[in-house]
Image (cartoon, rainbow, N blue to C red):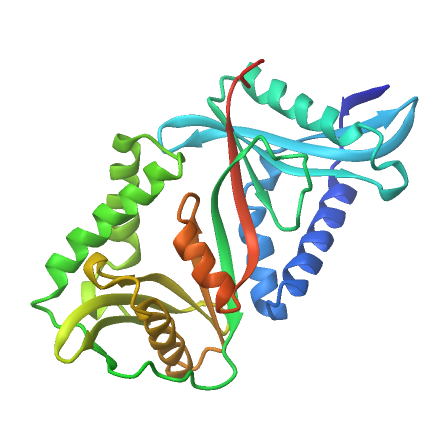
Length: 304
């Protein structure tokens, strides 16, 4: 029978979970410095987590860590770790730990439960909706440009319209992924853009692009260089709807990779929101690997 008991001293568990995360990020292709930054980010607030030992007839078989905190005005739970030792895997302990985490968070008022996956979870979290993926690809040499497509710096006159459209698109992505309500998504969008580009086009280490073909604007791009050591983060590579289906998505990716190399970085990273199958397929076809996947479940879990 699977049982749970709250762990008093989490020192050894913290060492173990950080070591495992570091190994997973490195295996996903991140350099040592970038992997360390991701470990620090993933375990922000780790001191507030409640860690339970998973036991079977008195034998320690693994750990599960949970926390409930405010997330954009809503109480949300998070599973920070769920691990069963290989010797005891496949005996139902994983599902029992997941169910225990859901109950623990629901009892403390959480309206949803989030989990960050850094490796495939099999069927354990199939019932959780995929909210987004972090994808990355190393850029070893300048990409082949797409014939007829050029990228130029965005002008100050073009910036206000672009910003309004980007904030609206970001809000829509969040809502479509089911991560937040429309009102919460708008507030998050306003906060995030104010923090990320406080100086607009003049914000350091950012590239803003306009994509054109035969003098006609077909899309835009926004990239943050040094997001992680030697990693550029693509906040947006956007092709206008009327120009989609013509191969311009790959042209946008090539422009982003060129800007990455020009800034001195060697990898390009993107977030693709859940429900955006077109973008997921594009990233898969262009060699972008999944580094993280965010999933969530509404609480309490619906019963059938």
